[in-house]
Length: 483
Image (cartoon, rainbow, N blue to C red; front, top):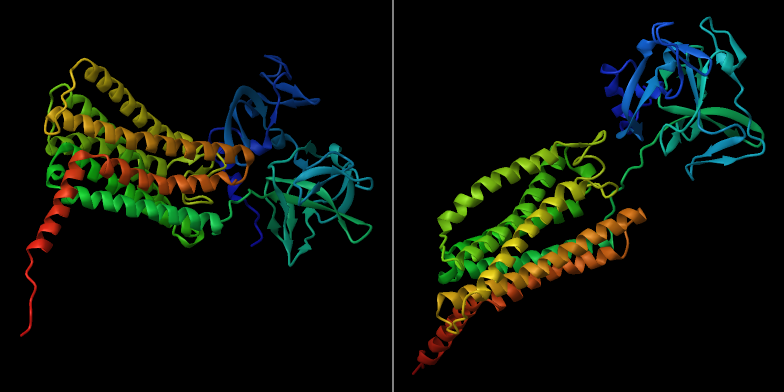
């Protein structure tokens, strides 16, 4: 059935339950003359009396199928009084289907008259304003013609305002434009809303990003393995926290690589909401684990010792909150579309949802970490420095130094991510700055190797012991001879 209905415009239909009519059937009558109690509070707009029951205050408008908050204003259901006819452009203009805009054309017909079919089947050329309420506006930024085998269809305007082709009804969200067929024949064609889709692309940029994610995953696996092997770090609060952090990053980046390389069209609706929700969960949770480490280091310099059991007791409620947040985002809407599961299985780069739902919680976690770091520095400045590698104070200061080297690198890397999104958003397309994101992603893994292994004294002592044991084994081995 040729019933034309666009997903991007469905949001307006939800308003009919609370308002007298669909938003598309209303006009702004703010400033129109009110008859007060004379005619039961009716209004006069364009010399038409509008009953009070068809007038309602609105605090939003609908653009491209998305509900947008707006200053409170009055709107009237004028299409309930007289059938509405909508034109895309002013007289003497036509809508260019490729450039998506109205353009002047010297021979474009005016829209004062149009062929119309009466209820008895009679067709005639009718002066429109005597029969219809005429509106000149674009329902959406992008409009498209409905064709069959690249040929325009013959749509008929009926006296009740409906547009029909062989019993197939056209959508309300339309506008007429003249189309030149051949060299001299003009045809009035209704255009339907065509929400701009975000097409899946798997090119050099996407493969580079996936490879850099893999490099970071391998680096984090090395960090995780070393911390699992090191007996001094295995059962401490700090060691358990680092292992939990690397696990979250490994899982989060692996799922992000999967979403980058797979077309959303090949994923089920459920998968397209669950996978990004779990990706969001692990990546956001990783930053709050870093804030726990910062909190733990602050307590250490105040004489408070935390065990690995305390880490899990503290982390448990935060994990539950993070799970709730990720699934809240997974089932949330931005306008008329789901945050996840629309044109993409991740955040749509054409809006600011990624800032509100992803970067904002990460920024809060970074602020918490920085706050405890400053408190720790203040506490350290009040105490004398003990230059002994075996002292508790020395080990904690070394952990603090190596951890904050890594945290600083991580914060800079994610700041580049935010800047890249903002730059691409205002440009309206991807830029070469995305390659900087790729390099920063790989650098994230190298930073973990450098700071969490190379600059941690306990890890370095553990690795030296392994190396010395290997050398002793070689020196004490006895060669075998065959006589």
